[in-house]
Length: 231
Image (cartoon, rainbow, N blue to C red):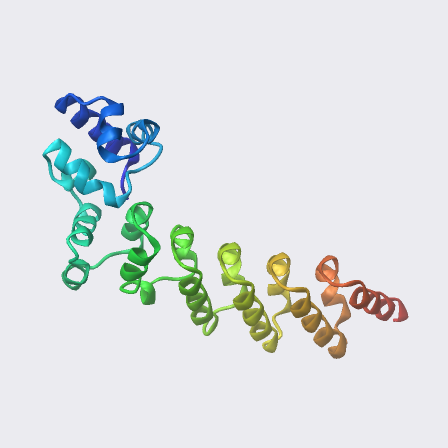
């Protein structure tokens, strides 16, 4: 993972060595001087498209700006349109991909992620979730549900589509795992929650629905109350 403070110090040092002001560097790159200031303070990273320009302005390699490592070599291969060749020769871990993700666009991340997606769990995806497309995350969620439980989706729930969450909830209920719905209830549609609740009502295990009561519509909640007080 790139250390933004170190990268920022590198940029500040190289800028000083070339005698360029923050405003001057910003003008050459077509960005605001605040962006350059943020880089140098380590609060953000340059966009990948700016790295070749920075390297040319400072007359150094991209690796010298980012510091030598797998991450900088992967970035260099992408900029040289040699990503496929690089990935054939090197294994990239999910941690390494998470480290370079802030510099990449969604398409670039997706290309590299294809090489590692079969080796990672849903929990491993959390650092990458903000950088992956909805389609990729939904695909991972569906695959994970084939051998996991609904609770595995909890850390990623806010990044998944309503469609896949409802789909996974219905699948989980086929196995009778009602308790797994509780931590995900706020992310599920009322339709699915009511469907699951009705199944439980039909089975007679009304008390199992109490934790879900705040998320159910009033008609279902009334049925639960009446059945419980009728006992």
